[in-house]
Length: 282
Length: 247
Image: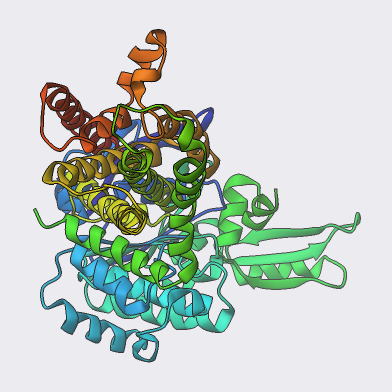
């Protein structure tokens, strides 16, 4: 469905993407996981025709993104990281204009349908600026889904949302997958990648450093993590492949030892020596 | 070729909302009225014109041209710059299956409407004050071309500026001098010969020449041709900038 071959992109002296190759299958939710600045948004921008790569090719549904952008645009939907709705217009007006741009047939009927589906009917005539962040995200999703795209790009879909609204959004995204659409989402939330994605690609400084199902990635590094405080007072973790091994390690430590299942943050730590949240803080 | 309509529709929808705020209409009228009072009823008495021409009759078409330039240009340049750099709404057009030419048409036509609206306010004032101000078919054609030309220039500015402050810089360098030196307030015949080539490069000069004519003579035909040329060039450059858009 999406074939990314050796894509590179540099901004000034910063290499945003470095010879990245990836294949995304039809009907899956694929997650690009990595800290801010890893290159996730740059990749989305290239795939959605906003940015041209310095090298490499991207094929979507058999079409080259750089050579046939118009064909690509008619089969994709995009939910950007930043809210780019027309803030002084109503929900309905935003959907109407977007539908006209995408030449959606029976537009008014389809707007009503999507408003019901996204539980936005009561907000139909609300001006975007008056809506909460959660509702604005819903409108962004509704807008992207209105032309019934084959592929949906979601750039940090739940950024800034509180946990309850985030979970509601996950339900909606699962529903989109069940309709047979392909979803490519970027996130720096470990929990989100694990909860939603069939497969995950981990990005660090423009490079793809790991690729597979969340379970495969965790199995590769070890499924158990023993966390303890060392004699200098630092929190240290050791990753092991079996529960028995984890218990053996824990037995030799002092109080305050925790054994837990590994997660994608541990995968990132193991592969890069850094934590996603630490890079975020930098 | 209907891809331009949603873009035009959106701009007009937003424009309508702004019109409902009374402040907008007054602010659009403010500077031309200040000029009309200051020059038309005050300083204008000192301006020398051809025998038999009163100053208000001379000034009003110039003010219409200036106001249409300011509004067509500023609305488009500012809105495009903000939507591209801050609100990121321009990216919605780029990611839609609409060709760049249609985006250009939509933006420019919306700019034309905004320029015409501001011009209508001045025209209305023109019929209230005592003058021989009249509207001819040539006046309407020139006004339309002027709006089209400066809306296209607005797209160029909106696409090349790197921050919102840049639009003010461009305006100070290009729009402001044109407003004062292109024959809005006094005849360009009075400008020293050495500056004339510069004056004739400015597109508004040609608008001011044609908009004051009742019939198309040689001078008028040349200026009208220059206006059409500028419209074409600005439109092509704007379309290409949209086509080459790359973040």
